[in-house]
Image 1 (tube, rainbow, N blue to C red):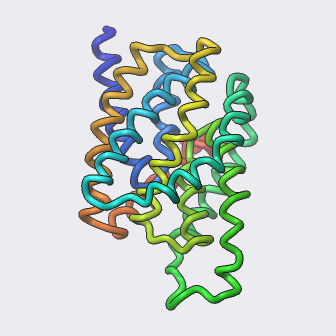
Image 2 (cartoon, rainbow, N blue to C red):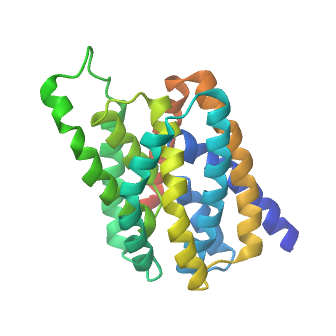
Length: 247
């Protein structure tokens, strides 16, 4: 019976990595599966973090093989998420609050709408360019959310980089997987030290996430914004339905 669990987790890992790299919200699928297999909320959260880390390592290398990274900028933005991620992970060991999930579902729909709006034509005005500093407090808040819950953090990163820095969606995803990898490291350590990882399940899920992360990054480069927007819409619909308990 255990082998079926591992095969299920590998398949879930491939699917959720595809969602996470191209859009977000994959943890809304993987977390309930882990809980269904007998893990409590904190253990499922920690087990999922190891898979997220694996996914983003492979996605980073896959993106790097296709496009050149601006490592300096990626590291700078990642550093701003770290304080929030560490604090959020401490809260995550006692995760709860069902009402928050319902509010989050509504927020996700709003984020999807804003990301899907066509980008402004021409160069951003000087007034908008002066507001680029807003990315830093936004990253602090996103880091806290990522360390705390993780599910759907990609949507927030996509919205922040699209509307504050005017990145296209392919570039957003390249930076996004790097940021999530960096802030996941301290969050993962907190889950490990608190004994909230089931390692055999984590390895099976991580293997699927690694495969999905690698190939979805290549797909993002090959197909561009069109495939990202499609997956984004589908991912937000799935996440919102799940969080609102409509099925």
